[in-house]
Length: 285
Ligand code: AMP
Ligand code: MN
Ligand code: MN
Ligand code: MN
Image (cartoon, rainbow, N blue to C red; front, side):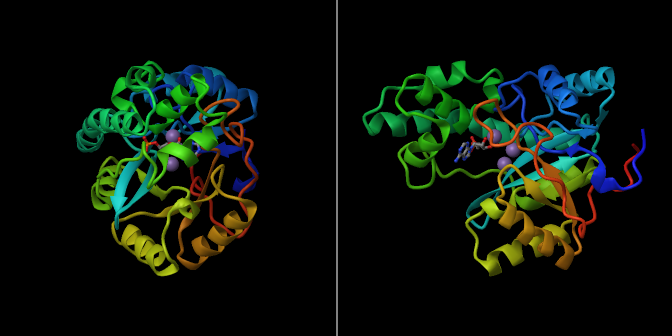
């Protein structure tokens, strides 16, 4: 199957499985992607490559082109930034080390998050959050959010984050992840492409965003997400222009986590605008 024009291919390069904070197994996620007409996909779990082999094997069965993926948590200028890595060697030791280091901090953070909620008068949700995390090493805010919704303490995921799990709220804890240089360096070292994830989500001034992109490019980062489940159409247009201005390739991904939670289904985000050069340009299809 070939396409004359890379924008016409249904490509989804950002989604999560039970290996991090998604609700579907890698296999079920690939089946869903195939059913939705996705032609090239990457599973990009937070801070782990545990789901890569299963996703790759399932993709081969479904005839979907598979690219290895990961979404690395980074602290930059006091802000949490996500860097997606694509098309790398998932067995690379340097990358594995960085990811293991990030995961190490998650358990203690989760305990402290639970304590913060208890101090606010909520029950101790540590065990319940853990029960929502199929991969305990990846325990995070989404698992706490699911526990709070399951208890009926919040009506939906969005309100949990707004009430409890964002900066300044009782279940939020400032945390230091990897450095930008470690994340981009590990992705590049493993032969991959580094993509700045959902740039509109960061609380950065225009100058801060410029500085981030400048440093990201200097470190070897080469693409930015333009169309993502985390961007409005307006934000996608803004970052399309930014990609062109900064000579960055553009990526597209749903950031799908779960049915009923995510704004867009796998492969169902709008197409990438024409003016951008897709990050998948040149990947065989
Ligand atoms: P963590 O890595 O533990 O800080 O968790 C971050 C994850 O929380 C993100 O990857 C999203 O899946 C989820 N998240 C963050 N903000 C929101 C929100 N407003 N609504 C739903 N999920 C969110
Ligand atoms: Mn997530
Ligand atoms: Mn993210
Ligand atoms: Mn994501």
